[in-house]
Length: 575
Image (cartoon, rainbow, N blue to C red; front, side):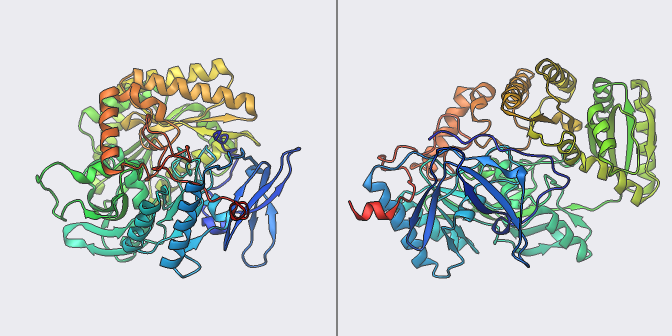
């Protein structure tokens, strides 16, 4: 099957946070002479489209709908199934799932849900619809689904928050069961004296921190990717965020253990709750960044950090290189920064035009600092930073004078993505995620800007300069610009690897960056990854087609070990 086109991410003024079940309803119209084919099955449906699908937002109260032109997508038709063996596999799996979960709200073949749970709010890829969605509520539910998947050799794709960016949620060409983990949303225990918490995979990091704050517990979970990212997804993609310069990433010691359902259906807990352990190798880390290909995380014990007072500061620089050199100098002197973010002059211009800021920022490369600690510690840190950055040409250094001013300044940093999406009305965006040693960041950004100029593209840049990680939002308005955007992204990824960096600092690999892994990691490392995958998941049933550059998703419907799409039962009943 031909892969679907890149999703048309249009200008947005705010993030989309609607639950998948309410996010999509569909109306299909013929694009030209192409046909619209519905393969209707007993008690549900599977949909194959050769049309333009127009998604509508529906008000659950009045039933009205409003067309959202930003969400018009081309959907590539699937290759028809031909083998009878695969047909029985998926149909039998559906029958057994419905017998195992008699509640009609648990197992779904509704076309809207099949599509919605294959998409991410922010992804630049169109996900292929699943064949079945199962809304689980416990680890035991996951085990039941996995055992049915294993019995009938149907691939499984886990879903929790739907905020990933690299096509991590798409179904393989031949169909799949999507396990929706968003219902595993309980905080099971808070151990304040030990500074850790046990929670299920569907808990979001922001809700966890809000709960701690509501209970008056002066602790927080410091990993902060996009809002509404879930713990399960954060573990699976090896996430980080703006706090990484101080607290590191998910690959640090913040995930003390995980409860994981393996492809065999066995449930393991990777270690105990102790703060440290030297018992064997770290099995927990085997699943961090594995993107659901080795096991499905259902619970985790997370380490918490003391919640300290913070203050924000900001300064402008002549260019990206001067700003980056200033950061390297500050960090090498041991200054404890919680965050240090960089925004280029184009993004500052975009923020000023966006109209959500109380300030009109100078259109220069800008650093946003976040200091933490006591009042005295913050004042001392601020004095040192202000003194250090002057030799790098810094101007207009400002330290927030109040908590509200700090929040207002930092909100401008948060608004960068949405301001950039609104910069060119009608345009779409492709987000990059490269990371290099901090000292090489100016070289990478300079090369990227040169590529953008050469290709005639507009691409605002913002990033986590303290880690050498930056994101460019490459804007494009038509297929010709999309091709140029893909070329620019390819150049940036390869340049990052050339500079001893990585094609993805925090978004993960998914389907979007599989082709870069051999160049970045080497044949031997990739072969070892493949060996681990094949050992734990010999039938390639867990999230196939993601992460590994040399393990393709199931596509040959005659292969015994591969999953398959639900067919039109009418045609099979006549055979």
